Amino acid sequence: LNNRQIAEKQFISVNTVKTHVKSIYTKLQVGDRVSAVKKILRS
Image (spheres, rainbow, N blue to C red):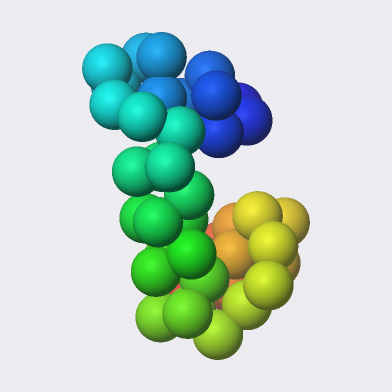
């Protein structure tokens, strides 16, 4: 799902989604969704 689709499904703004996604990337030390998923699946 892209940020807009996530926002619509969760009834939140796109900016809120972007903020949370950025926080997740920082915590996982990755730069994109694919890298985040790979890292999660490896752990």
